Amino acid sequence: MKIIRLRPVGLLLSVALLFCAEDNRDTIPSEEIANPYAVEAVVVSRGIYHPYLEKSGVARGVKQVVVVSETEGVIRTVLYDYGDLVEKGGVIASVDREEARYAMLQAQQQLSAASLNYSASQRLFEDNTISREEYEKARSSYNGARSTYKAARERFRNTEITTPISGVVAVIEEEISVGNYISRGAVVAQIVDLSKIRIEAAVGEREIALVRAGADVAIYVPAVDPDRPFMGRVKAVAAGAMPGSGSYPVAVVFDNEQMQVRSGMSARVTIRTTDTDSVILLPSVALIRDNNTVSVFMVRENRVVKRGVTIGRALGNVSEVKSGISEEDTVIVSRTTTLEQGDTVIVRVIGKSGDWE
Image 1: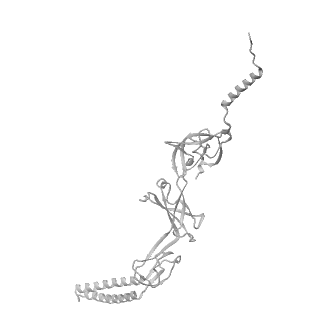
Image 2: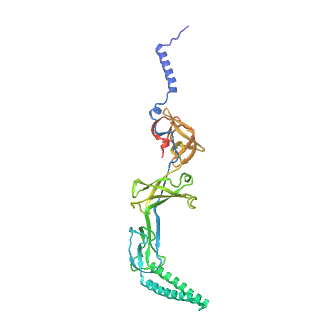
């Protein structure tokens, strides 16, 4: 019988190859370890859902009026121009007064005569010297003369076009110049009281419940100083929405003692809200929506773990999370459209989720 013997070298090589094959089945490809994804993440924390509302609007004087002419005639004087300060009752312009003055004096004389006649008629009527008809005629003449005089006096006064408020001349019409003819009802100027400024901001229906009258407001006017705010308050909150937009007007007012802010300047307002509830918040960019489910990518030992969450309120860049994650969890906020479960990542934490704006 022939006996076949394996050479020791061949046997050792076979065993070595067998072990190499077994090891290759469990080895993670080197490129998976060598090329992890760099991502940004936040540490889950609580915060106030919406402590502030930021809105924009246009600055207007709290008081502003359009001055119109109550008379007609040739303009004789124009006393103010753009940007001039004017006191309440100040004369902006005047028209030719001679005709109105003559008519007033004539009406005054007629009133004096009618008054004397009426007084005499009263005494005569009491003495039964004249009839009631004669007495009523004298009284009617007096009343008519008095009305005529009041109208003539008002016309004379209206030859001086005055402002009903103190403020700054914001607009004066081009036609208002010496020698031009002005008609009754013509617009002369616009006067704005800039000592207080009003801004009307439009607030959506999901936010209006967070705003109350008297709330503190920081107002930024870029044309004056983009970084230094004026401090004001909410003056009024509308009870109903505007028909066109569906938003609710909120009036903000603040003092403008140095007259730095002009009517028409754009402004940004930051309104402190009534929201005081502390809840778990996440940046909306962290949410992965798939049909009717919402999930996030968490980090566990530098690996991506996908976790389903339940979302509550959502406003702007922040969403409330009711379940699925806990405080101190790490949630990825970048590359969420390209990552997959189990990917290796290098994480850079950029802050707490409750501080996200």
